[in-house]
Length: 294
Ligand code: SD4
Image 1 (tube, helix red, strand yellow):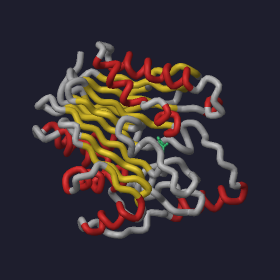
Image 2 (tube, rainbow, N blue to C red):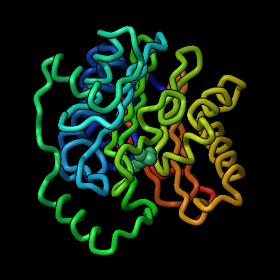
Image 3 (spheres, protein in one colour):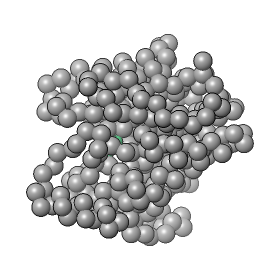
């Protein structure tokens, strides 16, 4: 049985993010505020090497950030390849609320952020710089499942008024080509919300998520009557079918979380190892997603 309010987010780091989001939800606040404030905790955490401050850089040593946010009215905002700003999710929200656009990238996103009062900050921590320098020795680009590329935070919340919003924020794939944008800032790929139905977020190999519009199809599956758990499973099966003969398949990991209007949720991944954090009135805890492959 579903409950509201509820917040779910990807990976173990979602626990601290949920804790923050819950404060907003339990005081009757908006899901939109919850999903922004929640993921900000992880953006500022240097220990998370895939999000915001402390994120692993691209192969030139620059930390570039992707983020998006979507509310219960299908308003959305997004930034991609943004540098030197600690909270890309808040810049994405400003794009949504203060401009006629949905997405700003690179230098334009940075200039916009500065004009909105965001500070310029160095996001490359000594630890991430050291990892990058180690990587440079061989310069071998090979994403390692569940480790190297996968701590992006995606969050979905259903508030006490029955409204759903979502957020997603990442430094993307470590050692990516400069200028690479993943699924995380793309509405319909890394995140999709339709307040009539529910929402979905994705983590993992962004290219595979984009090829399949994975969160869009998850939400559409729920619209057709599937539970969130079933919808996430069907979307993962679709991703696997599409990538059957693809060079990405041997290392492919994608995890999808889904939440519906009744507060029911579910998660599914291609391979084992994907977990997610759930917080409702039963508490804040980590759950393992179901998966197709060991
Ligand atoms: C990307 N989907 O940029 C992101 C990476 C990710 O946990 O999810 N990391 O492809």
